[in-house]
Length: 166
Image 1 (tube, rainbow, N blue to C red):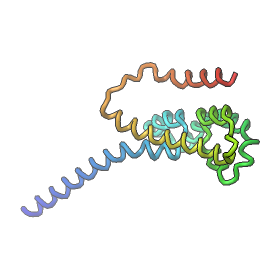
Image 2 (tube, rainbow, N blue to C red):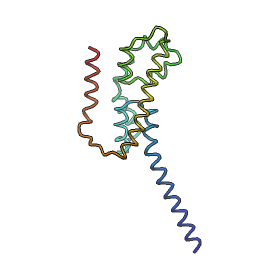
Image 3 (cartoon, rainbow, N blue to C red):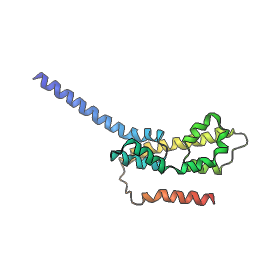
Image 4 (tube, rainbow, N blue to C red):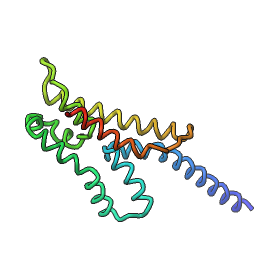
């Protein structure tokens, strides 16, 4: 009889641990994903691709195509980034629509180092993205949200960015 209870205890402990891990992972994954996949469109598409069991090579190719516009952004910043030394790899990684908009419309303050100015803008943008992803995961469990019209938000963002550059 003791064996039955100890086995049930182990199963109960395992179930509780699995439930706890699932809850923690549910909130941690968006933060981790935001650290390594710093592109909103990529994060939206990668979730569906993973859920559909898409092969990793197809996911990588899809994400490259979704974010191909960053190549165009990067080409226009080559001159600025050449002088950025240790910041350069991170600046290349962290180039997003919003960061591009800030870097191309902001002037470096007279007393600031150019590389640090660009790097800190990129770092702050990235940290806001990570924080927002985690807060969104937490709040998304509490507040019901109707997704109607959200699919248009990316189109609206590009429209605004285009108008600002004209």
